[in-house]
Amino acid sequence: MGRIVAVEYVTLDGVFEEPAWSGPYFNDELGAWQDRNLREADALLLGRRTYEGFKAAWPQMEAETGDFGMKMNGMPKHVATTTLSVPEWNAQFLRGDVVEAVRKLKTEPGSLLINGSASLVNLLTRHNLIDEYRLMVYPVVVGEGRKLWDEGTKVALQLTDTFTTKTGVEVLTYLPA
Image (cartoon, rainbow, N blue to C red; front, side, top):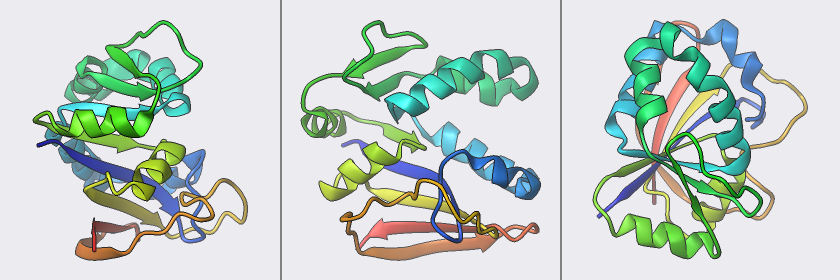
């Protein structure tokens, strides 16, 4: 049975988009943790905007990111989109009912990793399809921007692991309660 793990950058005030604010706090501890997240995954599960951003950036970053970049570029990607028509970068598009498409993916073996993709995370959360949430809570308040959780999204979570980096980032792992 497949698992879905959502890994998200978030500020203390809940903002997740355009995480340039994370740069001063990112260190080797978070790099190693992110490396483990990617290595555990068999494929990525992404929303269209995150897919387009990653597709534009990661192929050019492979030389500087080594094995991480090779894994990121080489692994399969499942993309929820209604507007894109030509899959690239090892992608296949989830068409029609995304919830049903993801339910089908979960019947297959392997682990799917979601990065970013807040609309998709919220949709899958509302349908109880995410098995684990790994949040990096950065010690910064940005005051504006898209929040990770949409109004109306509700989920009870159980904290299963936590650690704090030397730069003050709280890494929290939750399972649905």
